[in-house]
Length: 68
Length: 68
Image 1 (cartoon, one colour):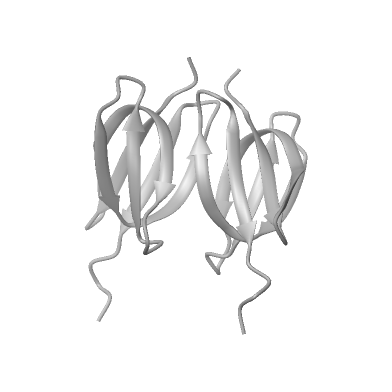
Image 2 (cartoon, rainbow over the protein chains, first blue to last red; image 1 turned 120 degrees about the vertical axis):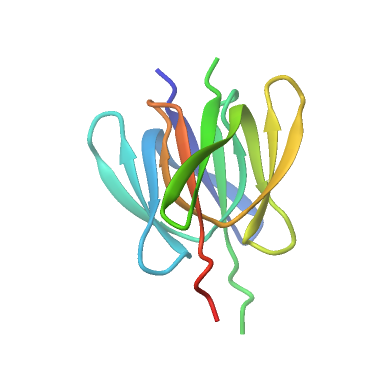
């Protein structure tokens, strides 16, 4: 199955946010996305998408904490 | 391989923009994304991501032509 792992880069650190993600859908604001895994779990992530590499099953989000 | 097909919704019409996309990466502006297929082709798409459904190999972009 072609799910991807979602990583969040925050203050320069890359952390695994959610595994086996199937659906990524923006909420009202484009800086929030609803994630749904292949197991039906749901989480919301805040940040902007910085890279998707589907063949390697990776989606990177970045949360910019420096925005004034 | 876990590539996806990218569709662009424009004026309510959904059209296939690029097949077998591996990499999606925002350009300087978040409303432009560089797409790279598994064959190494590159294209740039303008619009916002409205849905990714990785298990079904679909990424939807929407180009809002009503922005004033």
